[in-house]
Figure (cartoon, rainbow, N blue to C red):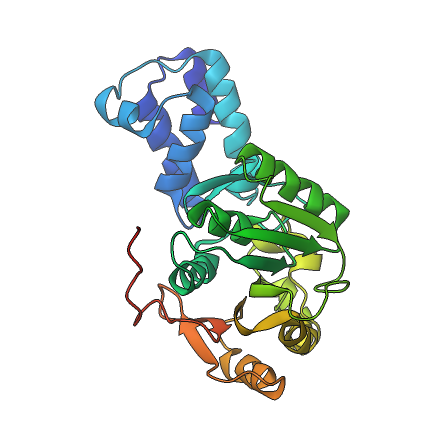
Length: 302
């Protein structure tokens, strides 16, 4: 039995449990041991971040310790915290996540940033999220823009179920629908003011080199972009051009080294003013004809 599990009978406190868990995660090479240990401790004990700081010697019960140990063992096996807890924060919303959907990532929030810059706070518009997964991009945008409506598509029945549940939990289900279809198949021409997508873009041969958290716990359907990672964009560029209204905005996530190629595909499809936008880490992240968050003033609320 390891040292942490024995704490359940030897005066475990919030602080000691957090520090012990942090040390074990750090020793295992986990990227963010302090944050992960804290989040798991909060989930196991019901304590909040402030409690850990202001009441560090609060006792952790044996039942809470057992729960903490079970979650910690899963994290040590490189299961992401989001999949352990079944939820993940994205933008300003909390989403349910399952093994059937990609865990939302902060890099993807760049698309929401572009969308909220392109449309005024009380502006009415219609959007499509192609390959919606958990629904994160669509739902975060609708939460910011109360006059907007949208549709999310995915070829995974299981992903659609997760997205619908998230929409209902956020009370956004009256402003969006989810359809099982491939990309924009079935939509009429000139249907949307905004089209977004975070498609699979990892080259097939690179999937085995990904971190275990991604390789072993995200659906390969949401990762595999074909031999060069660009297959989805070859379909998406003309399809987005077809369903987008003449003055519409599109934004698609890309791999850090795919900017020039994806930009060219959208220009070949007939778009102008196409640009590559960087994420907070200064890596190419989104191809769009919309505003660049780094150079565009944010609209003020009415």
